Image (cartoon, rainbow, N blue to C red; front, side):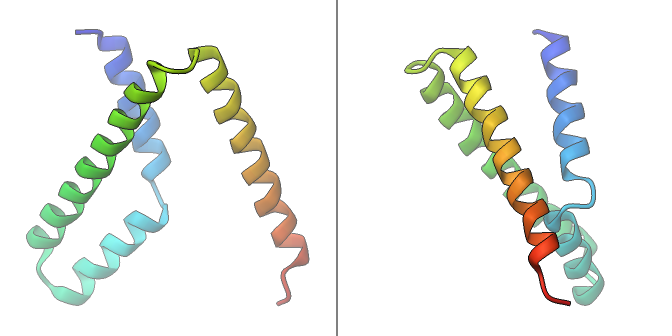
Length: 94
């Protein structure tokens, strides 16, 4: 088992999930339903299943595309989406 890959993945996903809309939705559901363990179980299962889909898609993609190209496209998408979101903040009406 590659512990470096494990801890890198854990850290990146953990930081990416902090304060995102998934966490805010889960917090809202726990507060409104009063069933914290049920909400925890459902949100954990949803995250596990979405992660499974991502891993399977990544494995499928890795078999067909060079890893360096995947990194470049992913980086470009992050820059484009970030720029788009930044542009929206300047054009949004209050």
